[in-house]
Image (cartoon, rainbow, N blue to C red; front, side, top):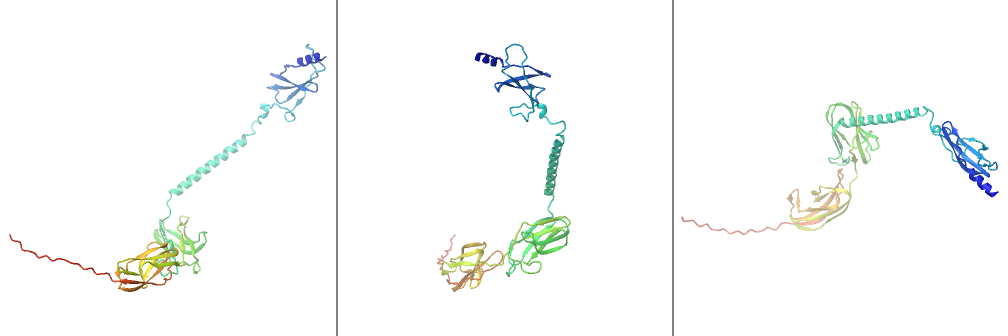
Length: 346
């Protein structure tokens, strides 16, 4: 009995060849419910369906050419739980379905390329177009409260073409503070001044400001990158000392200082400016050689004090004076020998 079952299993390995159109059905064997289950797939015409062929082992295959009882069950690829073969024809989309999408993608890419090219051309054209303003000169800092040359801010520039020009003082945020001019100008150099007041005439607070120029004929608005600093606070002096209290005219005594902010040091001798520092520093020293205005001072006691002046023109109060004794220089005697000339005899 066992031998008969083994023989039946061996002979049940079928190679069924079925013609489906011009394709050949290949049958693969798999165990199923005590019998044999084979999965058949047709190619190339029957790839859209899976065919199951079940052969009952009890019916037996005795090796003869008796017909074998088989049954077929078609199943869609989506419902089949096992591996299914997808037809190449079914993977293809219907004819003409993707054409509108492709045209839309091509049109989008072409539009982006055209917009990029147009922006590039406009940018290059603006670069080649000369600015209607040239030669800009703007004050860096000023103080409206100082009685000095820097009590106002000056704005100078050259206008390439004449027309209606509007010049405003604005904050860094773009708010107008003061309108300096709005009228027609000819081409050439223009100069404006701002004394630190707003549009209503009140003093403007300390801070940074900018200049905005609108040229109606050019349809251009230009904001100068130069900033104007309005500063009304005088610097403070934190230290002042003298290295030597007794000197002779021509000898050096050094004044050492330290400020709260950067400022120019000014050494006062008897209330008159004697030495002025060219550069603004927070600390340093100045040398005095006993002269004022290039002339030596008289011998005796002189009072030295210090002031600090910033770039805006604000000057601090003078420090307390320090007494320095100045002595007259020592006169040097010059000894010379007078030689008698002897007559020469020829």
